[in-house]
Image (tube, rainbow over all chains, first blue to last red; front, side, top):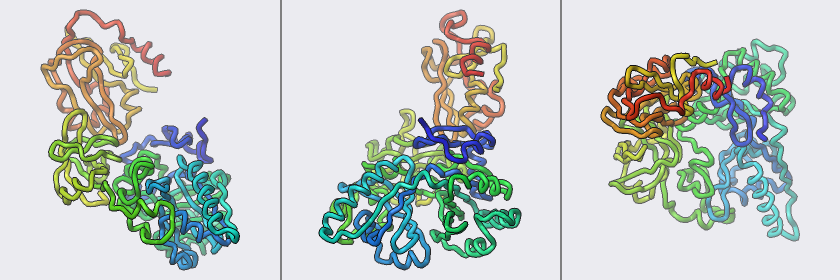
Length: 379
Length: 126
């Protein structure tokens, strides 16, 4: 049985075409259509219901020591991140180095942080984290440090405001709604100065707002209690933001070459293959997946742009000199470039033989169609 | 509610069929274009291609998905609408003017597996 987010009625009201995604009923598009919604986010501002995302809280004095074991991320400067109120992107790996999930870490306090994970992975992540905690605490016996893991997914709704006009929309919202408490004038002043990944807490710490997103544009992600989602959504609409569905969320993140779990990351793909070395401290002494992650990746994630009118899709084979060298992980029509684009995972040998602007083929409907390797992000 | 003209026949796979002398014009329904969303790619079978019922006569893609269009009959493609490839959006704008192919059926008569407007309307639940 698929779940409704707190904004489900809003999506029906705006005639969103509802689909099931990761167990939630969400709008794939609104009557404006994916291409227009995409342009709105690139040129103005749109709002996304991302309440399906999972939230896991880790707390206790050993929080970051445990995270340092759980995740490949560098935590040596975590005190700075806590002080500067800066979120960290990370992957979470299995012992074999493949990817269990990718996530955002909000270091809320020196003994408490919030992990934001993909909706489809909430149960797997939670089980993996609990097992990892048991192992970690046993190693530190007889003096284990207290750490607690709790699934808070049902306690949070999330709205993403994305696009170059995002800050202007928030200014309008605050001007139009002097009595709302989600963002007061002082919060707005701080929001305007936030650097990418920084966050603040508002509304008596019931609301968390970060300068983050999944579109490649400026914008904010706002976590808040489910009961407050509809009022904030309506104020954002009134301030001039357009509702955007999952379809445009995918084209936007793909143009920005941001990985999507299940496509660029999975239990078959390591974060090194996905090109995420910069988010890992591979050399640190003890973390899950350390040994396999020392190996040079066998495959490389590359960007391809169609030379003709064709549109690549996930799982289509990639060919070099007539041989299959990999497959498309995500493909779409890029509304910005007006061209088919693909992220593809190909062998390290094929990647080494095809520098930027080399030609590769993608098999589409039994025909080999020409593509050019291009730098990432696409747009 | 989608537009379902009474003077056309319909396949369960969402093609419309217009009887035109001893040939059929084939396109996709308003319901189908609406479900697919903004079309950004179209490709049509070439003139002279001999097809069995159920074989692909064209492919269309929206931003999000790819989808094939099928022939409701055995026959030969005698005309192919190549303008769709240059302007796939015309299928969204006017699906019943945007025919894909004209086919000459191998057998005379109307295939029994086609629906009339009322039947198609019931099938898509409108």
